[in-house]
Image 1 (cartoon, rainbow, N blue to C red):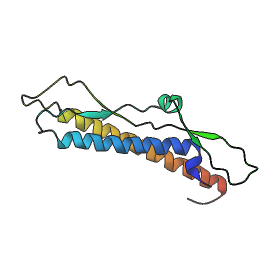
Image 2 (image 1 turned 180 degrees about the horizontal axis):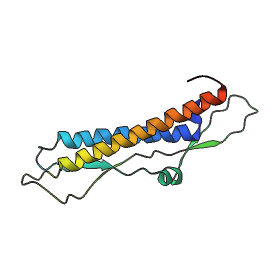
Image 3 (image 1 turned 60 degrees about the vertical axis):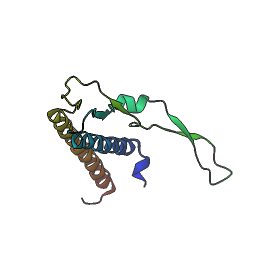
Image 4 (image 1 turned 90 degrees about the horizontal axis):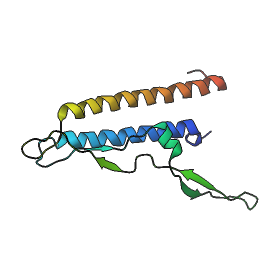
Length: 135
């Protein structure tokens, strides 16, 4: 059973990927907090409605038998672009990174990652329970 093809697990996997990428962007912002003229970046927000309502990219499916139907599968990349935010506070050297703000975002990202990991773990436990396997 390939769980990555299940909608719930695919959504959780995409969310974890987005959170990992966001953590990288925030770490880069913090690392450049002393770089002159550096502007902080962040990913476009990913929410459930956006993930389901995005314009899908059509991917052709592979057929292994002449009796199979041909078709396409939708794929959405939920974290494809990085946006610059307009700074409301800038240091004299032009750096717009506010460490407190970046650390708050890192903490928020960590909490969201913990929640997503826990949801993944709980759903695996429910599948194991349905199959009659112990934890």
